[in-house]
Image (cartoon, rainbow, N blue to C red; front, side, top):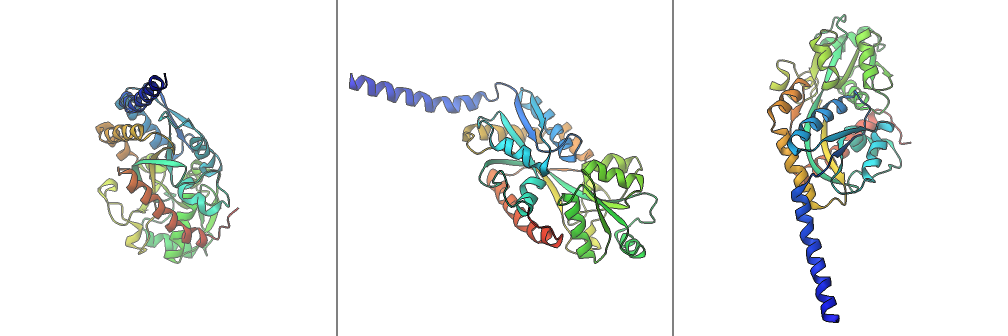
Length: 323
């Protein structure tokens, strides 16, 4: 009887191990939840929804967007961390919570490097320096001169203290040796609307947030935050051409809860790569002035580690104290 029982246990164990790759091979068998730790309408949300729609087509199962904004993305990231690690809850992560959060919060409800399995980047987003079209500003040099003419009292809008647009503006002012009055708003939409209305004069904000407004003539694009010119943005110059060393972009990447089985993670990444190869997906990302990009999980992890390290001096320059 002991031998029979031992054989039965061994057989069950073998079947269990065999079932995991089979489950991964059949993945996905039901809808997938994509947590976007931002409010609906934010640039990260726009890109995440484009990704989710195409991923649904590629995977043959619906990817359902679940917006969990608030607290600079911390709420959504914590929900993602605590989700069942079965591949049916994924997180569309970005700069705010993963890179800025560790520098401005004494205690995060998650560890960016330990609580998630890294899958791949899927987007690289420049920030765009935009001004109200009524301003006599068409170049970076002219903005610097305009700020000087206003005695440092021109309004620089941001999505809030510690936001990507705030820190991008601080970096610009430090490197360009120019001054403006930082005016924080409640979110990126409000800050961009303030520049459109002329309440604030300029901002540096993620490209998807202003792409349509630039095309519609409601904002004037002056320059972008990538290190040099790119076909993605046509003739728009880089801020770095006038302000050497300036570079501050955003990104979108896919994460899963840390204990998600590796075969499932491999399948998710395969589907992500197929998604980014879709012609319509690439067209829609281009319309949002966003570069399609993928990398390995190891490369993605190293990328985020480097981003966190590089953000430290920028946060200190902004005078932000952890809270």
